[in-house]
Length: 272
Length: 272
Image (cartoon, rainbow over all chains, first blue to last red; front, side):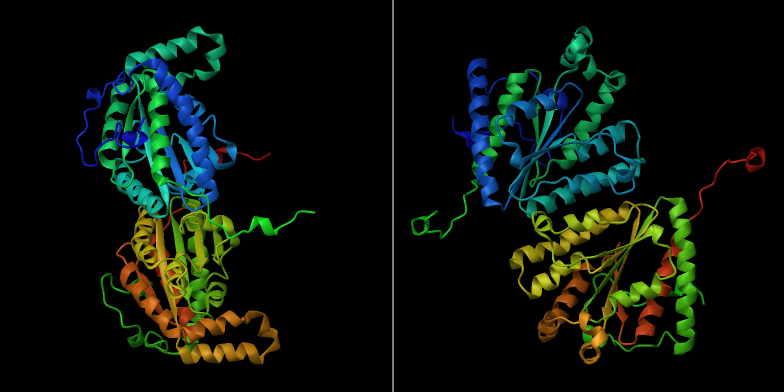
């Protein structure tokens, strides 16, 4: 499979008007069958590991993967499957929960900037600065005019990252309300999954439409040419993992990181 | 003295064309005499201490003071005199030297953002992100197109800070080449000041004109409505300190931080 064909998969065109309901969470048109898609995830995960080694050795650029999605949309599972084969040396996962007291004492991008990947590494944001225009908007955690300013602040911030050598990949994991219902019920039915359940999930589910609207606005304002959004059909876990693995792999292949050239003449060195 | 009259002192009008040589480093027109200016520094430093207490108690906004200037222009002396009366609880000085290996592995604003003041505090940058368009430009520490991008990146970054509740005060300490010569000679003549001298200062002095040009470009591109530059006549230490103390005080007075209102009924509480 030519991986470059994945570069524009599920891309939100900058400036486009979004109808989220028109984006099918069960879309599997890119996959002829489930079996080959699953095999693809494994192959892509291995390729990502190899590309990450080259990125690290090159030491000039970085990749930032932003994962956003409602509860149960599969952010953890994506990380496990797509980056499971990648050594931990050059991959750092940053989960962003509610901000601490110290974080709240600074602008909302302060804690985000600190966590951005160093050259040569891949950073994965499990939730991100976009929470501040999602839950922030839906729950009214800041005045409306402050929320409004954040879209441009985010675009400017991401432009700094991109101009400084970071490729920014942003994935919205798009699951349906019905699928979320099934997954939450599954957590209730299985005592081994009770730890994953919290009451807040139900409160957020009751605000489903408000969150969808906040996502729509986010996609319309923050899918930029330098850091576009991708909306990934996420009702099927294998399709979600296969799509993201293929896009990450295609992106790293397009970056084409190289081992640095050296002038080392190994034959002239004798280890005694 | 009405301190609000200091708010626009030595201000670089956004969009203005700058002729640095027309700005007199010995200008003392704002001070009738040295004695009253020195008395003013002391009064202003005390007022700043009181205003800082209120800023801290209020806990909603912050002040960032950026000090830039060539070697011997008096950055340390300014901090000592203007903030000498202010308690260290809410004032943090961040000197920015050559970036570390970890800092170099990120965009140039990464270490700057980390050091930005928390709500309720005053942050003082002794040198700053502007080094990256000053020494960075003069010494060619980055490709020209990278340097060019930084001006807009800085303006966007400072807009984020300002929109998030930080007032940004930027001072260029403007000394003449003759005065710098005297001060460097003074360091050589006095063994107790030898520790302040380093060979790099002479190398930078040899590039005086190149630095002046880099300062000019910086002032023209980064004196914005949200975070304007001020060029402070700095050949006379007392005039420099008096001007900056008055501007910092006027700025804090204009911010007018308030002790938070409480509903505490102290008379109902008995300490046993």
